[in-house]
Length: 229
Image (cartoon, rainbow, N blue to C red; front, side, top):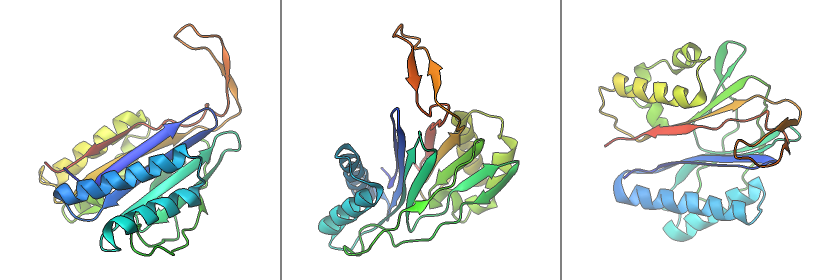
């Protein structure tokens, strides 16, 4: 049982994703995390905007905990047709971006975590994307004291030609090695590759008719997590 979550949904026009980290450990953190990801899913299904999703999860957590428990997180909406992305950053560690052979943090303004202030106006910021970008979202368990010995940038550079699914496997193995398999916090990683490009034709391998894929020269969102046992 742990307090980290990741979630994503992909359709023909958008990618939406989230990564969250509930305070604490054990059953209480797991219940708080379940509430957060459930609220975000309900908001997406209701067609809420990115700022609306942030408001909803914040309201739900405040009602549940009375502002006594909090969840950090980031929620992202990518318009595949326009190639534009927005992000809400609720007190969460910045993502890492691999671009043109170098790795750096994505600079974001920081709003307070969800579940503290029911009146807080969460900001939707631009998440700049260029074809070839690899963006890694993570929780603070990847940065905790023992894991800090791990040079995440070096791992991302060494795995830059790997599939995103392999990248999260390498990162998970590396943080376990750095901590001697004794993680003191939940650690979660989600990797997004953005290819960009115009709409293209694709043929279903299941025998369906050929169809137009809008912007899906675009994202790949494999993800994985490593948690303390």
